[in-house]
Image 1: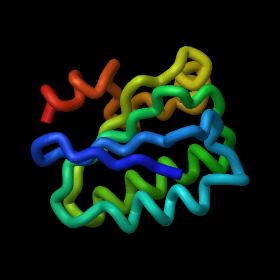
Image 2: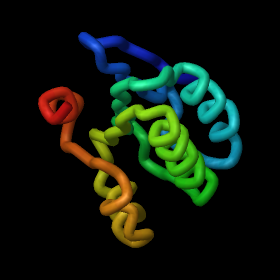
Image 3: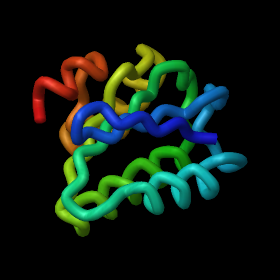
Image 4: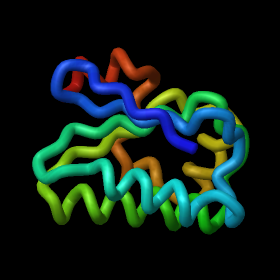
Length: 110
């Protein structure tokens, strides 16, 4: 469901074969991601390959962000498709999340 790669002290999480974050997958993904995040983590959610996020998907991302803040961890999003970025801007979440172009940009910004 999710792939976790450690690069130095940064946890890079990607979503494997899923191309949509919707009601059918978000509960499982959220549980896996939250279980993987330890206090004071640096976390990158790589949204490469995700072409659609519904309201439950955005709810999941916000829950993960809240969990990170509560555990003194830092969350960054990257590799967002133009379609998903339109939805993020429509919901005005670009000011809520720290969004970068790529995993490399996220790594440099920690």
